[in-house]
Length: 448
Image (cartoon, rainbow, N blue to C red; front, side, top):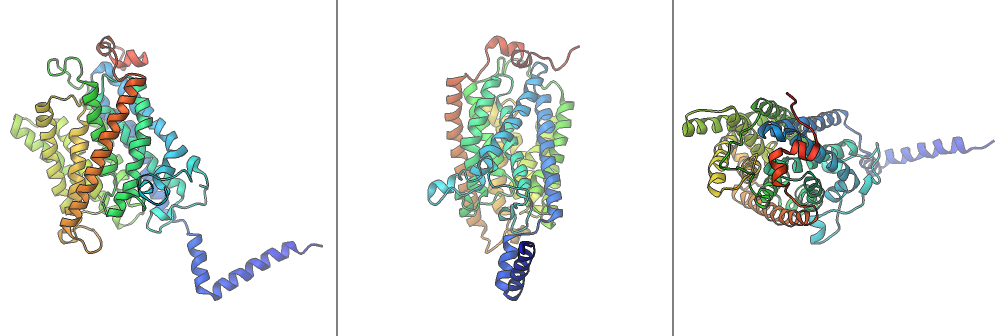
């Protein structure tokens, strides 16, 4: 007869008894094994699905309706393929480089390490309480949620040079850009050892990481690739504002997961972010519509939809930090300023940002990132913590904005040049005239 079956339970019971007698041991045991919060986990799973909805099909349809018929499928394909590629890169090394320690010193504050490459050490029992203010959700949930952010950011970029870039160039650039631009910015802003995080920069859901990042990269790409054939001379009107409207609505619905999900808990903070994600785009859409009506005599559907997206962009970094009244002000400013950026600045400078990625995401992201320093102030109804000084926080926000502008500007320029040298950036003139649907994919969006 063996006593092993009896010995193990006895030792376990003895250990529990000692822990109960020693409060410090009991606290250590509790800290070592946080209990997963099922409500927070359920909310984060839903938020993840919502962000996927805002990308495919939301962003794809929004962009697809804005291009000409002959390029509809190419945009859908680019968004879908970019999402798929980044999903694989994220679980192989992206998550590890963004959300693990890169060691001490400057390098460690810019990029993480490979401790969790290929999701090493991640199991169904591991939690992400480090990133969720001590509230435990499964680490797989956090990984999936952050994957959607990494995927939508390069998908936003493709709108800037739509209708004239090679599909192979899009894919190669995406892989390089996510690795050398997105991951360092995400690490610097959102990881506890990141450079901008250490400065105290506020970015609730991605004003710098997603929107300034993608907007500047899009502008660099549009400048390097050049204007579409006939730009400024021929009519390059959207082929289906109906699809653009449907896509914009899907973007808005999905954005609730984007912003409210970034609270990482199903609490009042998530409810605040959700409410702000309603009122800010409402204000921005009305602002864009009003300015457009005053300038052109008519308010357009494309205008109010574009304004709403600008408001969504601007409130993103402040979603859980601003009061609702501050969110409305931020939306009003973003709607009016982004209108002039799209209709005035772009025309004055003459660059062809096909779907206004910089004018809306870049400019709106800058407004939101810097404006967060103001609207988060408790004295103005915000929810910034600690001894909050508006002036000091605005300076920090400006530093974070400038760092992002410089990092993504230089990084994107170098990477576009590398891609151009390897596969070339632009299709031939004949292929562009034929349309990328047939030239790149051998299909038509519509067969009449």
